[in-house]
Every structure is written in C-alpha cells, then in structure tokens.
Amino acid sequence: MTYLIDAWLDRPQPYLRILDRSTGAVCISLEGDALDELRDQGDLDLQELSTSEPCVLKEQVRSLFLFSYARALRP
Image (cartoon, rainbow, N blue to C red; front, top):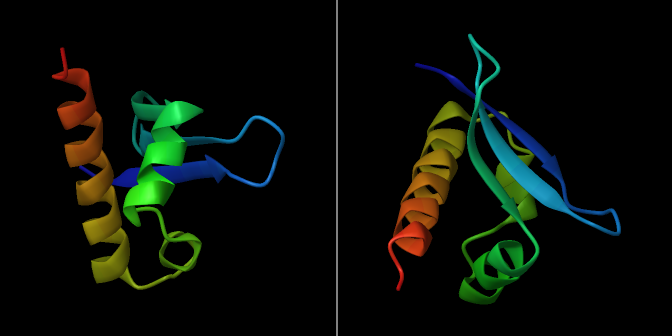
C-alpha cells in the first residue's frame, strides 16, 4: 500500500492528510490542536515532508499513523 501526503500548513486553517494513493481514501486527517501538538513535540518537520527521499517519507508517515492512533485512544 502506498500513501500520499496532502499537507497545507501555511494557510489560516492548516491541515495534513494521509491518503491511500490507489483509492484516494483519507487514512489520517490532522488539523488544529493535533498539528499544534505535533509541532510542540517536534514530530512535524516541514523539511521532512518536502523531501523526495523514500525512507524519510516512510518514517514520517509511520510516525503520523502512530500519533493519530495514540491520540484516538486517549480518554
């Protein structure tokens, strides 16, 4: 399965989505407080998102999935 990172972080209402490349289905959608939390933790690096190195992007997507699932499990 391959993913596409769709991120608009420099707009008034920033968002970041991870899409399934073959279907276009949204796997992860982060905005507002979630993006602020990622930035505060240092887990959202704009340079990593704009790189073309597959291993760096793979690690970034993995990290975003883990963050999203951990956030969903919070009480």
